[in-house]
Image 1 (cartoon, rainbow, N blue to C red):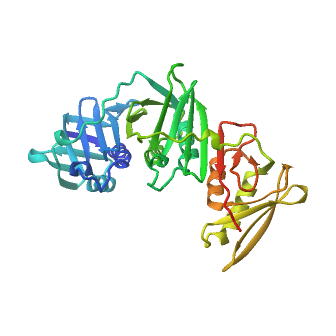
Image 2: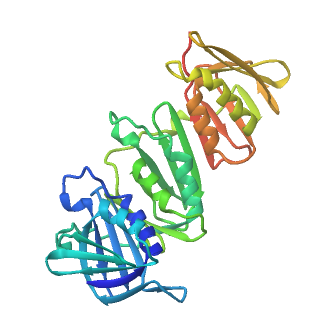
Image 3: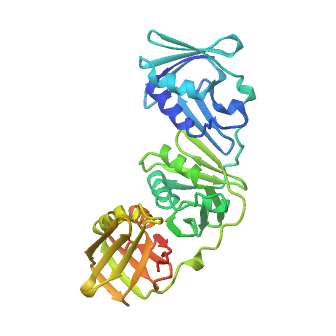
Length: 378
């Protein structure tokens, strides 16, 4: 195998596939990146057997030559060294040549590296997925949907199913739900799909986080294919495979209250900054708890008390408060996460009592919802 390739294209591709390479894998060859050169271009693959990423670099794109293939072939190179080497090469083009016994030469300018590679035939094959029942969604929307839900997955392995995001497709609507049983994030959006297809799967939160880092903010469509145990995301030059989590996701619809006793509309930025300030003292405490109480004339008091350090009280003027007076305590971190996920300048918070979950959403928009369970404070 021998080819010459533009350095920036190679660096970008290596960065993308590195997101799937783990140093802690039990299969030694998976600590490497598989490189395959054909007449069409160069394909790089990284995998940790849960997530696999394949990135394709075409011979030319937009009339610009990116790769010059001399001999096709394949090799697996140690990912950690290869990625560092490629990044630090001196010139804009890189020559990669595989010699007998998988010894690989990487040249750029006056620098020359020799890496010991492995036989690409030994590298596990990626799942073969039939792509006929794919649905499509635009890249920027998908990136937002992941960002607005994935932070709420559980980080504890006691209930593994909650470490994933529940994706449901019904009536051409994709609903993403994440919960760690103390809070919940939900986001809906229309997708391009055959009318009668429906899905209900759980995708590991870690896979979605890594995938969203690869996505750009374009309006290009991403193809999504779901099978019994795998999901495949397909963008212009990337295939991203992830295994699905086994088990049934809990029915979260009954957690979401349908009526409320107190509703308030607030400016997101003011409210977020006030919670952030209140949490400065709460952070030191055990559970980072902030209290919220309603006062006269639409004023909301936000306070936090940490006996060893001190206390903070701040008043925020709401745009409106309807319903009963309220005193409630909640985790400042959960509230900040939820506020950062929502879009728009205003939010509506609906409470159904001091010990019941409350909902935060953007007014007039039911495609997005954040739910938080209050904290008992005595």
